[in-house]
Length: 289
Image 1 (cartoon, rainbow, N blue to C red):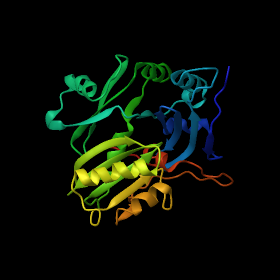
Image 2 (cartoon, rainbow, N blue to C red):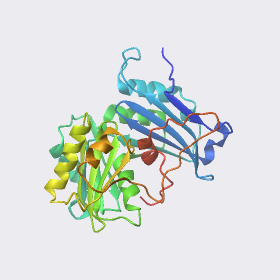
Image 3 (cartoon, rainbow, N blue to C red):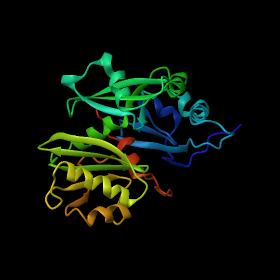
Image 4 (cartoon, rainbow, N blue to C red):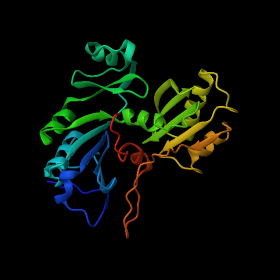
């Protein structure tokens, strides 16, 4: 039987499990990975962050079985927290404006956009920043794992935090925003502080990334000379993706806000935490998202 081994672990040497009662436990669950973070609201810091792989290879276990094994044997999941939150990272999602939202038709709306199996849980988050509901689905076996480990847990979708991260920026301008994470990216077009377009694309290289970005500019008749492109997530200045779009869009920059998530750094440890997870997993304590 395998026991979970973190791909990386960033921990405050002063942190102990006795402190968890006043802390929040956050889990970012994607198709191939699990990130855990302990957030201490008293210090507004993250004393512990870990990442695990859910890839096949652990005794031929499926991803949900690997997840179950990790959570069932982890000391954190047996501790008491003030709040436990699961953030789902998948692409089975769609936005519906409040005026057209009907909770009883959520499943119908999502199945219209995606070919989902019957074994999916359909849920929605109200995103007040854009006055819309984010409808999303996740597998029942994933839900079963989560509920078998935690008695009380809040489940939300990463896109809810994505909109919160962008729209909380009080200097938000008309522009295109692209959030890059794990060979996919969310692209958002905002005009006069209002959402005009949102979609998610998968890509394998910088050429494909550039193709989708330019397609959005073309579809909405946006000037590549005047409309800025803001990039964030798993991207940095000088990367192949950045250089590809920089050649065709005049105003390209890394998007930052006055509420940038804190990155835990402790003496003697190399901080190799992916920037994409800083945005979603290590978000500040949003109270009214």
